[in-house]
Length: 113
Image (cartoon, rainbow, N blue to C red):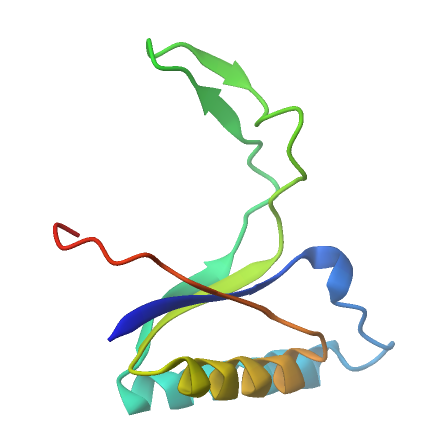
C-alpha cells in the first residue's frame, strides 16, 4: 500500500456564488466515504491565519517560508491505497466534490516511517 497526497491550491478553487455550502457537503461526503473504505489517513487545509516560519539547521526561527518557493496553501488529504489507478479514482471523486482539479502525488516508501 502506498500513501498518496491529493491536494489543490486555494487559487484553483473558484466556487460560483451560493455553492460553497454544497461544495463543503460534497467534499465531506467523499472524505466520509474514504474513511468508511479504510483508506483515509488524514487531511485538512492550511491555516493561513498562522504565518509560516522557517526553522534553520541551528534552530534559528525567522518569519515566512522559503522566499523563492510558491506559497503553500489550499487543501489536501492523504489516502493509503493499493494502486495508482485507485488513487486516481479517489482524486477524481474529490475533484468533482471540490469543483476543481486535484494534484496527485505518491509518497516515497520509507520502511522506518
